[in-house]
Image (cartoon, rainbow, N blue to C red; front, side, top):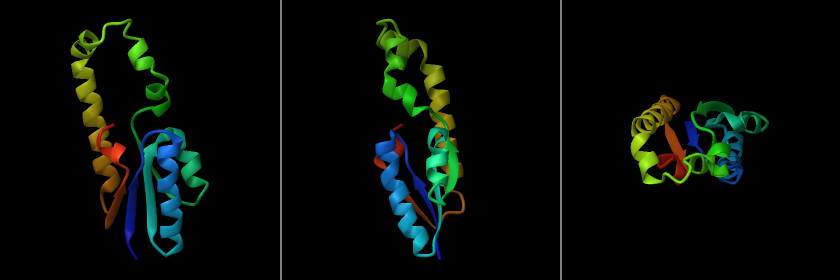
Length: 115
């Protein structure tokens, strides 16, 4: 049977379909690992699926704090924080890469490649 990694990011509504697919794949005899945010670890494990953490906090991003904390600076804030943004992106891509190692198949949510 196959080793399958599911990349699921975003809110619970984005992650839950990946878990549902993982449950069915596991029932069919596959080994399933869900790579998502730490926030969802217990949710993933409660369905008997393996878990691998991805960096980032969807609650923070969904709250809008990242943008409201800029105090109206908009693109000036992005320019001033570009190095931090690039570092976060690198860490996220490293997490995705590491999560997929050893997988025979990868199932991914479209947000997984843009977050």
